[in-house]
Image 1 (tube, rainbow, N blue to C red):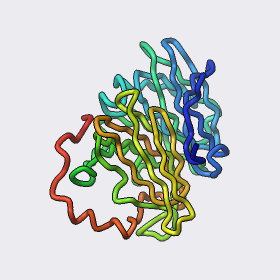
Image 2: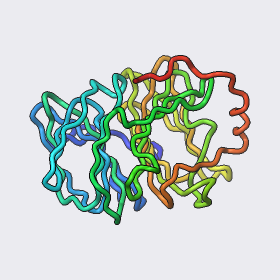
Image 3: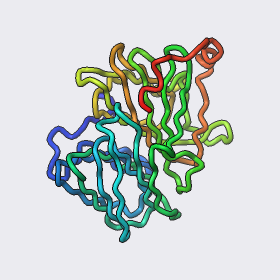
Image 4: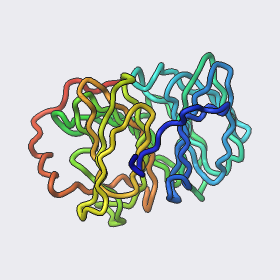
Amino acid sequence: MSALLRKPVADPDASGEIVRISRQDAGWETISLRVIRLAPGGAHTLAQPDEELALVTLAGRVGVRAGGLHWELGGRRDVFSGMPHALYLPAGAAHVELAAVGGSCEVAVCGARATREHPPALIGPEAVEVEIRGGENATRQINHILKPEFPADRLLVVEVYTPGGNWSSYPPHKHDVHNPPGEVDLDEIYYYRIARPEGYAIQRVYTRDGRRDETITVRDNDVVLIPDGYHPVVAAHGYDCYYLNVLAGSARSMAASDDPDYAWVRGAWRGQDPRLPLVR
């Protein structure tokens, strides 16, 4: 198995964590990801005081208590049936309590090591900018949840929807050198959901000097870590693909550079895939 691939927890314990990627597990000092599945009436407590957090609802509704405040967010049946709700929490919260509201729920807890505090913020679907990016069978939908302009210390979060048969993160791009404004050095997590359980996507992670060259088959709930290199994705024909991206690094920017061998394809696109947006 690729050293960059992380599989979901085979037998989640009472905590409900089906994905558990700490900074230490990833081998970097930037970002983390947990995905928590709560049964009706279930609860979970987080303790990540040195990280700012973005809680992204994947399914159902969740109640959150932190710092003496309380929020309820969510509502979509699954990631393929609606837009996200999210909650930003600054670093410093010793305990964050999650509780399922009105049924089961799934929540992605995106974290980044942070030192500056910003106010908590509830992010509704109306505040999520939708971008249709690319062209032809490299068209995809980007839901911008925590953009560089959002008042946070380091954390960046987006959702990406790729229709079956389409390419994404394409032309291949990288962000592993601090050379602003054209590129900044960002670690990145890809958390995958596939619209049907037997489906899959394929991700390649490579560097031009050949130091890294991996082709990874990803399935529902898999995670791929991107410490460096170019990292394009293709969704299997017939199987829509979702991934949640968590990023942080040398600057609060999404600047990236294309692989010069493939940058020319941008000029060849004559239209966009009419299947998009996949969710509204």
